[in-house]
Image 1: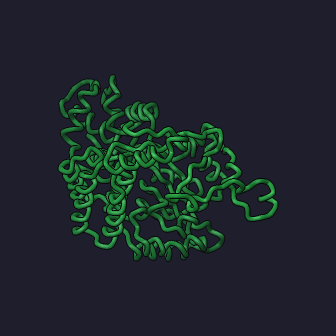
Image 2: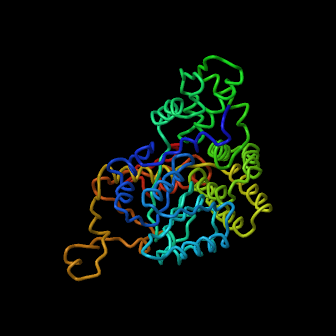
Image 3: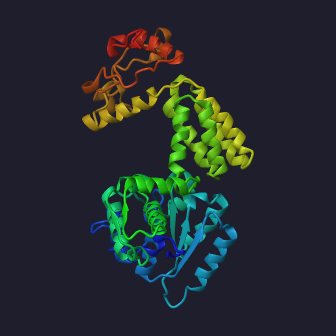
Amino acid sequence: MFSNQPLADRLRPKSLDEFVGQDHLVGPEGVLRKVIESGNVPSFILWGPPGVGKTTLARIVAVKLERSFFQLSAVSSGVKEVRETIEKAKSQQFFGKPNPILFIDEIHRFNKSQQDSLLGAVEQGILTLIGATTENPSFEVISPLLSRCQVYVLKPLGDEELKGLVDKSLTSDFYLKQYSVRVVEYEALMRISGGDARKLYNALELTVSLEAEKGSDEIVITDEMVLSHVQQNLAMYDKNGEQHYDIISAFIKSLRGSDPNAAVYWLARMVEGGEDVKFIARRMVILAAEDIGIANPNALLLAQACFNAVNLVGWPESRIILSETAVYLATSPKSNAAYMAIESAIGAVHEYGDLPVPLHLRNAPTRLMKDLGYHKGYKYAHEFEGNFIVDNYLPEEISGTVFYEPGSNPREDEIRKQLAARWHEIYKYKLGDK
């Protein structure tokens, strides 16, 4: 007989010492642990994938500091609920009682006015805000609020940490330890969880409960057993859990692979699953720059226009704008040359460090700088035929290094010809390389 309370809730850690993972934050030398133990906790945002302990950490902080704890979900709460909670927090400000903690799950789903309603309370210290988000807070949290919060990044749990959770749950959970359960293969549980403890617990509890119904004296968990049970019972798309990252991955790979039919199908899955429209649009902006790039610069313009438009229009009409953009991106020529160029250049920065700027490229606003040779010998391109003159613009140590190698598409074929004609002397660009 199993509880209606999910296994993840039954086994939720109650202290930092029970907490698994995120050693960089809550380990013996973790920055967040030190902040909590100091008792002086500022407002902060926990950014990380689902099932890695964001809600648990917020609750542990409240218990550790003996603070009142209010929790809101950005999915179901609005400005009214936020203001009511702030009033409750104000009512507790007496006799030096520490300010309460307001935990907002999925804070990235709050719109600007909802986030604005938090500003005064955070600024005045009426409450300490702890936000949880799976999205980059730089994009989703308004600047005035973000500037008042620390941001802590959480990582997916590792396989050893997940295995430890499985083994511990079989001996410590009241319901699971009633059965004789032995895990002989962990691979399926690891892959299904994807570093998410909640998904791990769901898969484990589902497998054990279905096997227990068969009346077996001993339950021996294998990869095949886990996959058969999970695939049959957890097939529905869940934007907050099971297939959130798998579906967006399939969508992006379909766009990159130039298959508009598959792209629209995965888009439809997300639309029907209630996915955040901004999340979809933002990923298409990234793809337009990373995978289409110079092959069709208009793709980035259209993707950006899509992002702006869906924020104005909302559901259900945004599905049309998303579809138009997805089809356009899927059918555009592809090039990752710009992406590879910046990655290669960053690699050079890491390898060579901060190389000095050549003297002729340096700014010379003072007489002393001019006397030191700053700007001397610089050739102003517009004074030469075709507004171009061969010169060296890189530090001497990496002179002639090619970071941008044009892709194989009509637009970049023309760029390659131009580079070969102009820069062959320094960069050895050649016609017909690709």
